[in-house]
Image (cartoon, rainbow over all chains, first blue to last red; front, side):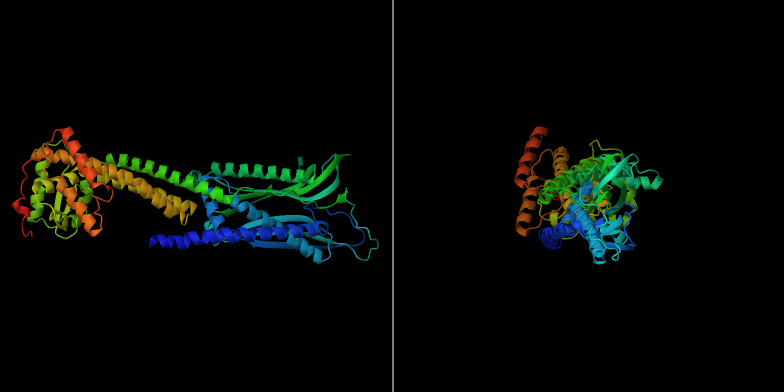
Length: 166
Length: 106
Length: 280
């Protein structure tokens, strides 16, 4: 009887977590790659604090993108086993990677909506969401924020104010 | 690969900005070190095990940053910033990011 | 000074390992570590406990005197106590070791020894035996446990192991993994209790052989208990739970008796009058 309980409460979420979680992760990655390709020449992002001088009076706006991601039950169990032995916790690496890329993408999409061509001064922040106990982490929040530069539309000239690709 | 926290490198000009490169890693210390840290909390002082852990993570994050920048064809990474956060029990993430650029001598 | 965005290569910040294979190897490593840790800690606990003098055990149990006086100092307990003292006479016992034998008048088929030299024999078990020799074997087996300090060692060993498992659960925060740790530790500890039972059999045989001159009637104990288990499907704790093979056990006993020079058979002493009150 106790074995049945164990199977139900412990093993089934792991199986569901692995199967569905892997599927969702792959879909998310596919979406990220597609959008990164699209945004390759829009709303370029750099983390330098000095923006180039642009013609006219460009507008500067603060833009941010954020996302809260969580890892599936199977990976959570894998991470606990990893932390028993020490070393790299590979289960969380993909989570943080796609969370960060998603946050940056959202920021760029927001900047593009505003008509900006570049985002400067990028900063990234990570924090774990939990009820005060790091063992019960429900998710990880990632924020990407920076200053978007919206070029002055009154200035004539079709060429972009920055140089062409080297 | 030149790594710098500056945005301008003296004696070099930036010929092309290539975008953001980042390196991140999640590591944890093994069970025994956790127990020792618990005991160390009673007397206080430096938790050598955890200092080591985060040192290793930092170095690994920089390695990955260099790899990414090299993959983008860059010679240098400017304005490098670090971030650390604790993800779950005992596991800490360290990430480093900066702007990958191509440089040439003045 | 041109500006562009290039995509960095994939797979640098994300490992390309197969997570299922990783978890499989990690689980195996985890089970092995737990078993190793448990065995080491149990042995450490037994060693530490054997340094605690028996007189401390006695003092500890005397403060729980309510427990020991549950079975009244009745005629049957007295008879069993006399049997135990007779067997203990002449044995080279550790300093200050005394036995405190009590008869428990209920149907439970059980007999056990616990800290402080306390031995409890239940009516359910004694009623199945038909000679003083058989009853003496049960008594001697329990006395052997006390002579070997088995109860104290078990307490010490299990205490250390449960501290470790709790630390594990607290620090790493296992859920589902701690029941895995619990099961592997129980399996590891089973080997220790089997070994303790085997040694108690041998020393018990020594005690019986010295007192009665032979080991006749002793086999009845194991036959009756095996039959009881087969009949009811229950396992008699203390005697059977950690040792499955009854037939093998009787043969082992015979071999040990031969080694010690104890004759295998002899006249059986009938059950003493003190125990026969109200027997069916």
